[in-house]
Image 1: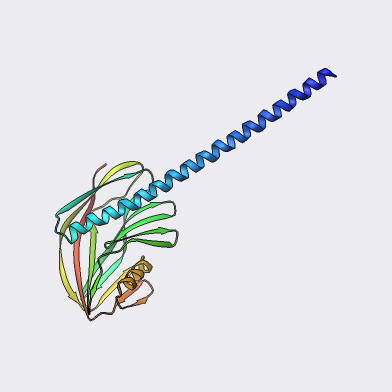
Image 2: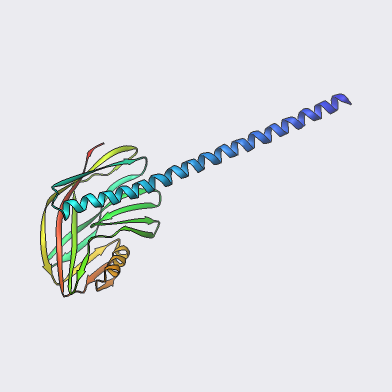
Length: 224
């Protein structure tokens, strides 16, 4: 009888220890997932801040006559790449439009034509508006063409360099923006109060006087 009772007690203890071990494993596993989620969230927040700094340095090159500016960014995962995203057409000229993108999972942070916006799947948030200005019947619209960049991913500290390769200011009565980010540009134009017509991914600026500030900017990784 005592032997049966002792055996029953041992079995009970073994079951309890097994349950504790399983529960501990689940807690540790859950903690690891939560920790990784927090790290990923913090990194994306840091990357959005880095893109605002990138935009600030781009403004110095394009608008404030700095010959070049560098920005150091730390990436833990994800990929940087330059994407042909559309065109800006004025007069008889078509200027290619490029997006400088950081992508991780379903999140994309985009620097395009002096604007910064973040996509969560198909939804976007405007992080920093471009210098599109309207005064009376005149609109100033910047057009920034990027060149010279190769994609990079993994874990690294990188320095993104901007260099002004030239440009000019042109007056144009007809300006058309064609971009895969047309929704973002439409929200920007609405906010500034620029009159426009949209057909698909094409946006036609309907203003009597449009000044286009064009800049060709080299975008490259200087070190890693």
